[in-house]
Length: 347
Ligand code: PLP
Image (tube, rainbow, N blue to C red; front, side):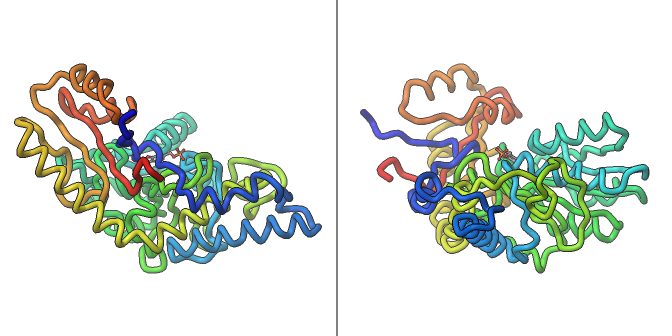
């Protein structure tokens, strides 16, 4: 059978074997509850604490500012709903963009149904949300601005440092959904004016079903999940120790390999762009040429039927972009998303 070429890393990445190795003991012989006081519980607690340190190191924050969740989606929900519900009874306005992932967009629609006003900023032809548009949208009652760090469909990197500064100058909090960007772009949250940031393990070669929210020290959020008070009361539930160990190890690997990996991926990506531009008439790049994730491509094929391209995917051993990604990328008649990452089928 031909080797498989996987091009859907924006949807999920394969588990790094080093991450699987770190998780393995926690899926078998070592199974304590991190809240138990006996030796096995303490061992689990140490593993969770170590993972928190590893995630904090990736973002350059204090471990106490990391709240573990069950997904990037849950981290986004906690950021948005938790912020709005932390100050009940006050008029509330939230600014986001039209190009957010449904984890943010649908949460904003939920907030609208419960009395919050939401402004959805468009992006330009280059896929970028304009800082000027944000400045114009700010109001005295704007409590939160939520703009993603990099878009999952186009791969375009947003000017979040500038957007966050505008939010702060206007007295609002700033959240960024960094699910696609974390582990691929460097973050230094001690130097950047962000209040909340979401990540998801399975986008950086960690396990599915594990996420985290950075919550700037001192910020008050209303929890979504109530119970035993884990995660500083912000996310009750017995910790998924194996998953958190996986997230921590994935964050550690990403932190040490990201720079070299980016150089490698940008070279591959640019070669692919040039080859496609040379050999396929009518092919074009969607979104800004340079402000994009290292291993991410969003292409349009002028004059090509979407169905024909789907048939091509089926006839090869390439794993095509997910239907949702392809659907969301339908900025033109036929456009496709490709994302590459550090993976080959032999690992
Ligand atoms: N935000 C972005 C930008 C994403 O791409 C995704 C997943 O595709 C999510 C949020 C949701 O993350 P999760 O799959 O961990 O719920």
